[in-house]
Each structure stands twice: as structure tokens, then as C-alpha cells.
Length: 217
Ligand code: AMP
Image 1 (cartoon, rainbow, N blue to C red):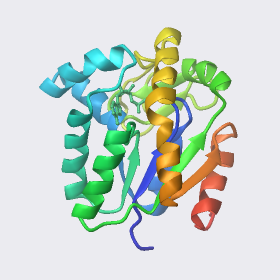
Image 2: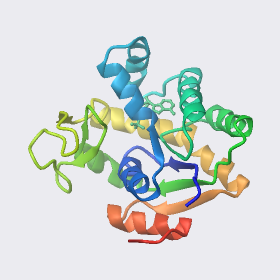
Image 3: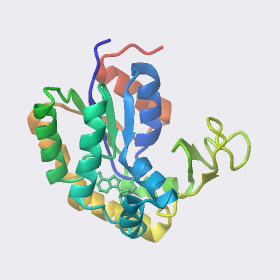
Image 4: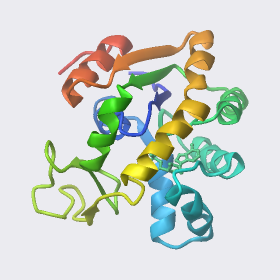
């Protein structure tokens, strides 16, 4: 298959990470999760990590210039990208449009994983993540095989610091204010595909496959 460039758009807890794992597996895309990238930087205590941590702990977005610079570097080095968690603001979306033009590449589709906000708080309270590779887990529906250890890389599987109810509510408000307008932005460009994120991961993925017109295995 020719290489696609995709964006996954959706509120915190919509299941973007889980859908990204499936898409990367089936379409051989290069996955860029800006959230995972920032958490790695925080873990390793880099300058970027120190700058980002203050925003992340408050449930706020990291400044546009910082994140745009990171994505620019990544896109220059990779082809066939799945962007997960970027763009999250209109200036980021506009910068991405310019970047695609500059690199003479096409953003093929933006997949909006739409969820019921009521479900998200309880969902995120069950979420676990590998601190080493970012693989997503769930306390109830997808616990790691060995408690606290990632099935893939043996890294430590923990709750995210920003998955506390108070911070979750802030992140949802930030999503509504700053990220939700991107739905219209991409709708107008004619590249938006919307799927139901309230289904099981497999159910949501089946909708994505149908929308992209790729075969289910
Ligand atoms: P995520 O794992 O995608 O939920 O991201 C976790 C946190 O990282 C967010 O709450 C933001 O603080 C920060 N972050 C991730 N992606 C972006 C982005 N595109 N723009 C600004 N901040 C971001």
C-alpha cells in the first residue's frame, strides 16, 4: 500500500493510543504520539521535559512553538506518519498544513474518534501506560500479563500523573476550547473521518478500517 499520512484526533481517553497501535500494526505507519514523546522527555529530565512537565501536570497544553518544532523534526525524517495527539490547536493545525506543503506531502485523512465526555472520566481512571514505550493498558479490560510490567518491553506500567479526576476535567475543558475547533477545520478541507469511540477498541477499529477502505484481517 502507498504510504499514508494520518492524524488521530479525539479527547483525552478517546482511545487514540489503542487505535494507533492497531493502525501502525496493519498499515506500517510511523507513530508519533506527542504525549508519549513529552512523557519520555519528562522521565529523562531533559530541558524539554522540565519545560513540558509544568504544563502537563496542570492539564494544560505545552506551548505551540515547542511542539511544532518537535513535529517538524520528526516529519522531516519519516514518511508515512500517524500523528497522535497533534495538532491540538488551530495554530498547530495551520503549521502542519504548511509543513506538508513544504515537504510536498499530503495529509490524507484526519480520523476523529468521537466519545461521550461522561464516559471519559471513568475510562481514564482505569488507564495505565508503559513509562518506557508508551503502550496503553487498562486495569480492567487490558491489564499487563505480569502486574506492573509491559508485555512488549518489560517497562514499568503505571497510572499517568495527569489521569487524576481534577486534571482530567481540566484536560477535557482544554480539549473543548482549543482542540474541538479542529473538527471544523478538517471538515472544511474534506479530509475528516469520524468514528465512534464509545465502542470496544475492536468496534472502533472496524469503523476506522471501513472509513479508510482498508481490508479487515
Ligand atoms: P496525551 O498523551 O496526548 O494526552 O498528552 C499528554 C499531555 O501532553 C497533554 O495534556 C499536554 O500537556 C501535552 N501535549 C501532548 N500533545 C500536545 C500538543 N500537540 N500540544 C500541546 N501539548 C501537548
